[in-house]
Image (spheres, rainbow over the protein chains, first blue to last red):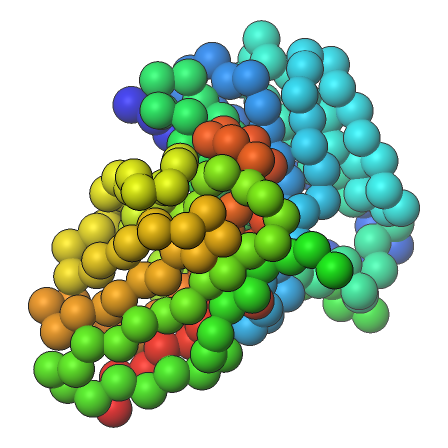
Length: 112
Length: 112
């Protein structure tokens, strides 16, 4: 079965703390993407991860990919309120007819 | 500026009516997609097209129809057969299947 699982699905945290969101997928993948969605808005691309060991960083967010473990992480460092959003991972799984398979999303609330 | 334009932003449909949501892109992308998002949920694929004059059903195509007569345009019709159409509809495009997807601003459809 082609499946992408994110956890946690909901995360409430204090400003200044660190945390990690996980994205596991079920079969071999060549490409993985992270997106952000603000309430009532569309999706914005954050990171594109194309190879094993890839690491990308933008501000307080860092994404990594381990294709052998079929796992990507999105790490938040010293969280600030502006990072409150829902974060989705999407994976280009082989045998999916090249369609992106989406995780359910992680709703992140960062309290001042 | 290159991008994806969805219209209208808000749409109200009466029971038994067909409505068409517009999606236009000037990114010269071959692939285009329609997703449905219900409140607090992830994305579900309705239809996708990898090339002009060709499209494929996604996971929830029943009650929807599409056309792809031009590379730039991928309109979605929500037919009266769709019994619960109230949702947020997102159009996306990518260079090719499985590549990074870029999203329009979405259309919020409400049945009145």
